[in-house]
Structure formats: structure tokens, C-alpha cells
Length: 246
Ligand SMILES: [Zn+2]
Image (cartoon, rainbow, N blue to C red):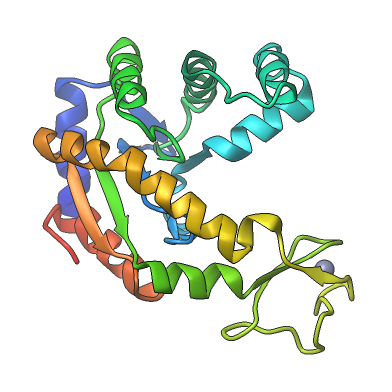
């Protein structure tokens, strides 16, 4: 870690906008690419826990803005109510707002955006405007079977939101939450048919994005078929040495 910190401090003094936190200067600006169920969210949470890196899940960000009724949230809701996708420029504005609020952070993980080439170009322009340097793009490679196994067996507590997996972390009592006794259910997003459709959309949209970031020399591929801990060790190794993983 020390070597990387030194490298980052030098890099920051030369070019990009520095982030400061408790005297520590870090500037890990990451994008996570990967299909649903490839574990991006779990890894982002660990990076947040260990390094204080902000997790920008664009899905959560959007839901939050709509729930709070912010000016951008209202605009987005107008599209969502009509069953339309929220336009890229609104998403980009929301991400910009989030980054401006996070000046005390040591960097961020962008999760869920970009998904298309035009979105990636728009993000490039935003970073340029904000003098933010992209550190790396982590690509979570996971097979269809592994993703299905993870998501189809997932159950959520209707009351407190706790997550369970019928095989790997089942509740003590079938169908009941360990923490609050609430009813466990399967989200529509986790049904097999929906998952297969989401994987297909991901593959169609994101293939060109992978080439784009590979050509820029920032793509880091991870074998995301393994456990959360194993994948996290790879990410940490990369952070410490900047060397290839997987
Ligand atoms: Zn519960």
C-alpha cells in the first residue's frame, strides 16, 4: 500500500484534483463493469469500509434523488413515470453533483454507469471538466451459471432488507428473517427469466465498452466466479502493486 500511496501522492501533485482525508491523500477513481450478480456491490462496500472510498451506485443514486424530490430527481421521475429510460445527460448531472459533494473522500467507485459507449464518452468529458483522473476500470468476469446460482437463490427480508442465500447463507427458520422475523421473498429482479434478460442486455451493450477501456490501457480483469474474499484479495493486490490480477 505504501508504494501505491507514494505513487498517488506524486501523481496528484503533478496533475489531478487531490482528495484529502485525515492527512492521507488518495485518489482512487474507479469504474466497475460487470453483469448483475458479479459482486460489484460487495467489493465496493469493502473498499468503502477499508479505504473510505465513496460508492456511487447509479441505481441507488437515482432512487435516492427521486425519493428526496431533488430538481434532478424530479426530472428523472418524469421519464420513469412514462416508462422511459432516464436520459444520459440527467444521469451525468447527478453523478457530477455526487462527485462535488464528495470532495472529502479519497476517491470513488462508479458502479452501474457507464453502460454504453456514448455514456463512457460523456463520463470522460465530465472527468476532464472536473479534473478527475480515472485510475482503473475493473471488469468483473462471471459465468452465466455462477450468476444464476447467486441471484436465483437470493431472498430478501420484506421488513428489514436483510439478504439471504438459500444455499450459502440460509435463514435459521425457512422463509423467516433471522434478525426481525419478517417474511423472506424473491425480488422480481432475481427471477431466472429477468436475470437472463439482464445478462443479455449487459453483454450487448458493454462489449464495445470493454474494448474502449482496454485501448486506453486502464482495464483490469477480475475472475469474479470466485468468493467475495478471493476477489477482494486481487483488488487489494492491484491497489498495492498496480500489477495484473486474476
Ligand atoms: Zn428482517
